[in-house]
Length: 414
Ligand SMILES: *Cc1c(COP(=O)(O)O)cnc(C)c1O
Image (cartoon, rainbow, N blue to C red; front, side, top):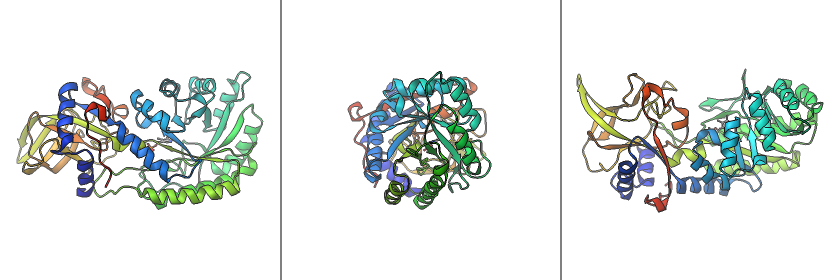
C-alpha cells in the first residue's frame, strides 16, 4: 500500500504540498463531502493510453463509470465514441457533444425506449439476444438499425468482475452464435460485427492480452456465419486501476505491445474490422478524489474512531459495502497533516449501518473535528454508483477542476 499511497500523495501534491492548500480551499468554498475530478489527469491518462494503442483502434468511454455531464464533455473530444446502455445515457452523451453514430449501446434488458433512442441516434446497437434483435427490428420503422452481436465467450478474464464465460445474462452463448447470426441475416438489420466483454477491473496485462487474443480467435470462427463482413470487433476492456493494498498499476506498455500485435493479425484475418476498446474506470478512476471532513473523534473500548461526514451513501465501493471487503481500504490521507504524528484509527462514515466503514485500524496522521480527509482513486463508480438518498443525507457535490481552477499541475505517475 505504501507505494501506491506514496505515488498518489505525490501526484496530488499532498499532504502538505501545494495541493493541500488548493483542496482546503475547494472544501471551504463548496462544502463537504465533495468529489473533485481533475481534467488534466483525465487528459493525460487518455494521452498515455493513445500513445500505446495501435493507430486505428477505436477508444470508447463507458459513460457509466462517471456520467457527470461535465466529465463526459471533457472526455468526448478525446475518444472515438461512448459506450452507453439506456435512453438516458444516450441523451446525456449527445448533450455532451458525442455524435450519435459513434455511440455503442450495450447491456442486457434494454427496453423498447432504449432501443428506439439508439435507432434515432443511428447508434450501433449491441444486441444481447435474438429476442432483443427481433424487438429492435420491429421498431425500426423502415430503417435498418446497425447492430453488433454480443457473444458470451467460452472463456472469462481472470479479473475482479467476470462478465463472460459460463452462464451469463450478457450476450449470446458462443455455441449458439452461428444460428443467431443466421437469424440476424433474415431481419432488417445492418450487421457490423461482434462485441465480447470478458471481465473488468483487471491489473494483469498478460491476462488482458490473452483474453483479447481469444476474442479475435472467436470472432474469426464466427465470421463465416455472419450476414455481412465484420467491420467492428469490440474487444471489451477491463483495464483496472489499483485501489486496494498490494495492488500495483497495470503495465500499459505490455497491453499496448499485445494490442499492436493483435491489430496486425486482425488486419490479416478480418481485413474490414476495426478493433474497439471500451473503458470506464481506467480513464477516470485515478483522476478523482473524494473529500470528507472529520465530524467527531471518539474512543470506544480502547479503539479510536474518526467519524467523517461522508460514507457508503456516496462511495459504496470504497467503503467495502458492495464487495465484502471490509478488511481492505482505498488509499486515504489527511490533507495538510504531513508532519503530524500518526496513530491507528478506524475511519467510519455517519450512516447507522456497520458496513459504513472506510478503513479499519489504519495508520493515519493524527486528526480531529474539522480536518479534511481525502480518498484517492475515486473518479469512477462513485457518486452515481452509490445509494445517495440512503438515510436522507444530501448528495455529494461534484466538480471538475483544471489548472485554471487553482489546483497545481498533477505530477506524473512515477
Ligand atoms: C461496465 C462496462 C464497461 C466499463 O467497465 P470499466 O471497468 O469501468 O472499464 C465497458 N463495457 C461494458 C459492456 C460494461 O458493462
